[in-house]
Image (cartoon, rainbow, N blue to C red):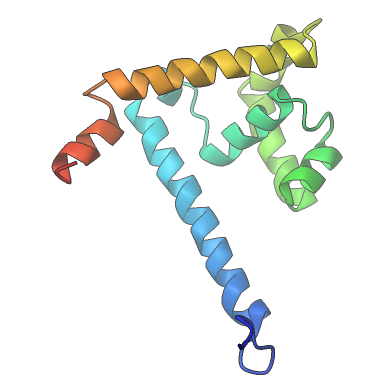
Length: 139
């Protein structure tokens, strides 16, 4: 039985890496489009990439730009520019102010509740973009 990956016939650096990068960019682009559909989110003018940074800070995965770079596998320069944009929008100060005195356990509990609420909204909201896509697809 042959291996799935044959080093002699495939070059992961030339084939797989660009595909993974393209998939990542497609996901972020799709998230950007979804953000534009929701007035309350769109008013923040936050891109999907910036949202991922905020989400990881809120989840306690990183407390510094360096930790974010390691956790998210981002270039330091790109991370610095994204954080600068978030600071320009005032979002980092808002996040820091809101999280003052909040424990990681409390953040996890809120996250669990929000995920349940999101699941509930997807089940009952026939006007959501996903529901409309399912309806158009006949599902």
